[in-house]
Structures are given as C-alpha cells and as structure tokens.
Amino acid sequence: MLKKLILLFLLLLSVVTAAFTIDSKTAVAAEEVVDSEEVIDSEEVVNSEEIVDSEEVTPYFINDFRYRKVNVKTYNEWSGYKRASDNITTGKGGGSITATKSVTFGTDVSGAIDGLGISTSKSITSSIGYTLNADPNTTVYMGYRVYYKVETGTREYYDLVTGKVLKSNSYTVKVPQHGEYKLISAK
Image (cartoon, rainbow, N blue to C red; front, side):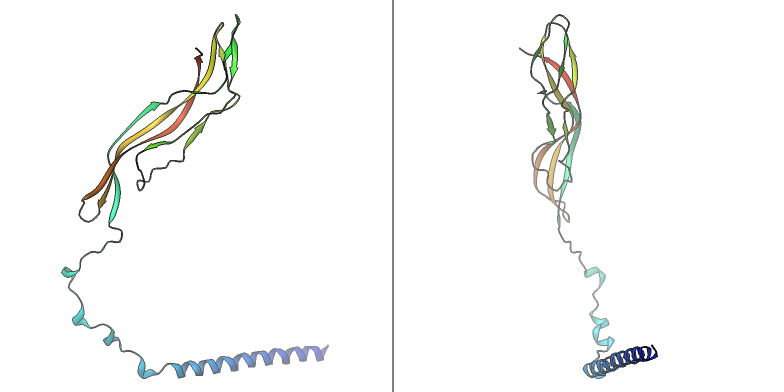
C-alpha cells in the first residue's frame, strides 16, 4: 500500500515538473519574439497637431433613410357575414341551428406597410358547435362576422438628415377585434 502511495506521489511530481518546464520554455520564447526596442512610443501614435477641430466634424449616419406614418386615421367597422352553417327550415315550434363550418377572418392589408412596424398576424376563427335558436316557420342559416379596427394613412420613405420624402404610398390595415353570429334569412 505504501509503495502504491509513493508511486502515485512520484507520478504527480513528474507531471508538475514537466508542466513547469514547458511553461518556462514558452516564456523564454515569448521574450525572444518581442523586442523592447520595437515597442511604439505613445507620443508617436497620437500627434496633438493632427487632432481635428470639432467644428470640422460632420455627422455620418448609417442607414440614412427611414419609413414613417403620416395622416393616420383610425376607426372601427364590421365585416360582411360569412356562412357558418347549412340552411335549416323550422316548423311551428321553431328550432335551433348549429355552426358546422369554421370561418376565419385575418388581418386585411392594402398598400405596402413594410418598415412601419405593423403586425399582420392576428386572426379570429368562429367555433364549430355554436348554437342559435331560430323562429318558427323560417328558413335560415348562421353567419359570422368580425369587428375590425381600421387604420389608414400614408407611408413615407424619407431622408433622415434632410427630411426630404423620396417616395410615399397610401395604406389600409384592418385588424379583427372580436366576432358575432347571426341568423340570416335564406332566399
């Protein structure tokens, strides 16, 4: 047991000695690479006569052009109805009708809106299985519509430095907020 412990100690000592020897050789090699005469004096790097007056400095912009919204107006409006069921004809006692189709309304965009930060990912979908009661002696179907928040305006591409408008276009974005079902007479 003692022999194993001594052997382990000698092995560890040899590894440490080898690592120290390699590290000293690397340090000597590094000293040979850097010559102290070649080190640059800090006065050579910055010459005080070459410093430019702050009045001569002009700003330099990266990406001088931007998009902006102008003449923005917002209002709300309902969409038209989309069919969410087949027709049902009721008798004297009336009846109920259930939505058998799902209807989706997404964000509606007309005109270019790139660069304005407007999201177009919102959509609303009706549910299958929603039920409404129908009046007696009628033929109806179930419709679904959404309430839109509408934004209209002008998108301008302009120079950030001069303010000059380079191009513009009008746009309209309709974002669905919520929906409603309604019984509609089938003709």
